[in-house]
Length: 158
Length: 178
Image 1: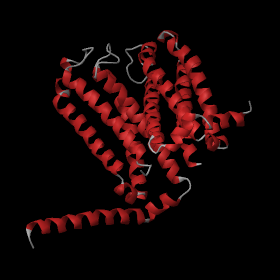
Image 2 (image 1 turned 30 degrees about the horizontal axis):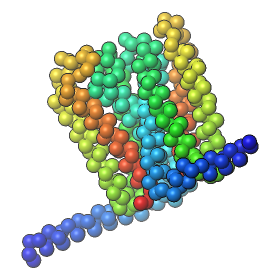
Image 3 (image 1 turned 135 degrees about the vertical axis):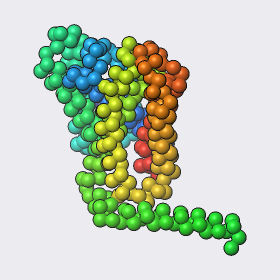
Image 4 (image 1 turned 30 degrees about the vertical axis):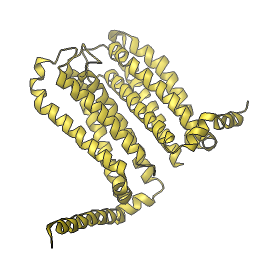
């Protein structure tokens, strides 16, 4: 299946048609998408700040990361589901939309980075956490996730 | 002039003047240039969105601590100290960009019920925070380390969460014309 026919298939799904035909579904799903974005970015910011040595220093990094795991996973899952629904309702518009393609690439990198590098680094005991790696991971995840958000907002403006 | 008529005329006059003020505001050179620019409006809008995400996302962590759901082993004051500066930066970004967005679209915002709902929810969120600060914060030493804070603190946290979620939904819905 070529990329184009995959987009066409998404575009023709029953749910995609239902969203297009409704005045309310798109705004409702979009609002949920943005609420989940706020939750996800909140967890990313708090963990990054802890990695940078700001706030809740009595708690180990691993505990701050772990405490927010459920919130982070739920927010991300919600974003992926609502995001796919939004996408399906305007899949052909997204097909030649540079911000959308940028967002998908950034998203793939951000998710991979989050669940490999960030998870591994945040799981280490504080004593084994190098200053440089903590700083790099903190800024890396902030830049990636805010990049996803920025590109996402740009889809509608392009 | 009978009293009711006087009130009616007065109300009409007030109503007109708010519309006129909005019209004047968006006709200023700043309002017009934001509206007509290819880049400025989207950049303001994107920054506004990320500012909201940063402020509400971090506020969420504090509200969940107040509600007794997260970081139960960390004192409330420590979570607040970690989170508040970020919430405030995000809030400032959101407030400043929000003013410019309104400046360029004042008439549309004035006519939008969702904008009014958003303003009311913002005021309620402010009142909720203020009431908490005035009635609970002074006594917070007594329950700072409680895994689950007292009822009123929990309610303040949960109310804050609901109000901010409402602000986001109303704000997003403003962009659509039903």
